[in-house]
Length: 311
Ligand SMILES: Cc1cc2nc3c(=O)[nH]c(=O)nc-3n(C[C@H](O)[C@H](O)[C@H](O)COP(=O)(O)O)c2cc1C
Image (tube, rainbow, N blue to C red; front, side, top):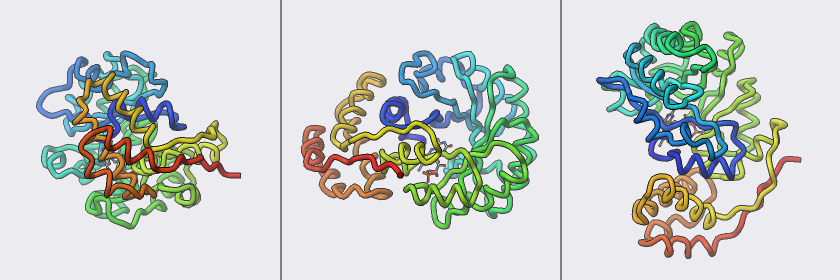
């Protein structure tokens, strides 16, 4: 998630969550292909794999040749899997021929996936991230088929159209239809905020793989609960917001040299998501904090949470 799941956040989620892998924030390919050094800078795990969470590099753009050259450079920097973003709804990105705007031209999705696939060694998987469509959810069928024809190894589908933005409803059923029709690995995504949401998404899509965004940030127990439900290792753990924030600040200092001021901004951004999409009830006090210590003080009074694991 652009501006949120950067290297420090991925490092933290790698140590506290139950994820199989992370996807980088998107890197936009515009006038020139992205050189390897940019991938090394933006995705430091490619050179130093000490976070323990494999990371897939995501790129975004509409020009097949520049996308292919960029993907190759990402592999030279150490990427072991590439994801192509055809879902970003940001107007600036869309105006510059990137993200969800390609959903209006499925053949161009095929061309980009194919060019990237052909440029990379066979052992490097190429996947695509899609929304259901630009305007109508039914567009997913052709778009997904084109991405598959281009050679995508799997698709991640966010269960909304571009015109919806992040507004309800989330529509998981079309993901299930694509899953049945294509016989390709499909990762279901969108509005999984609780174990109950997860169960409904699994039942409606028939998928075996899931991507968590805002829900994982709002509820740090969620990935463990879902892992257990899927029969994967998930651990029982206690956590509290104060210690999570302190750990993230440590990662931000170590990996990006963030100042206290910038770190405070990032912590507030995370806690705002936790208030919006989870049960964090102290954002009104947190948003007025002017120092990290003040914020830790507010959080120190909040209870520890025991990860509730299903039966
Ligand atoms: C602030 C923000 C930034 C995002 N950045 C990206 C991104 O860089 N690449 C991407 O594929 N999706 C991005 N997304 C979309 C999420 O990956 C995900 O598809 C969407 O939030 C729905 O899933 P969720 O309900 O689990 O959050 C972003 C979403 C948000 C809210």
